[in-house]
Image (cartoon, rainbow, N blue to C red):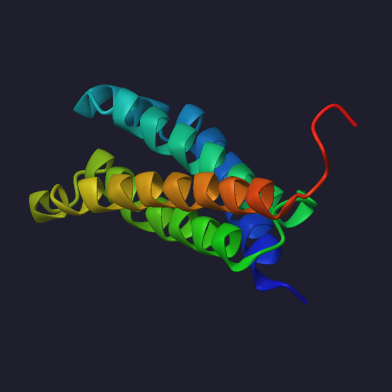
Length: 131
């Protein structure tokens, strides 16, 4: 079993749950603390990158180690970026603030790995143009 799509699916489901939780159970708490947008940002990046990580497994041209590195970066980025924002939105310790950009950096590195995977795939494709 490939662990990337498994964990990506679990993390994506968690993103949906956290989005619903923030919109309903935490609605008043987030509004009172003025952190609703922080929560929404966390959910957005959480879901986008979970789906991207999940999708790498099902993209037939990206079956190399580079796309696995991309997915690993995205999943780790979710933990650092979205995780720190979730905690901060609920009044967590301010020292978590510097953790958020590290998650963002992992997102960017992941997209770099994804681009490299596509590049490598194109370089290995010996099909003549126009065929």
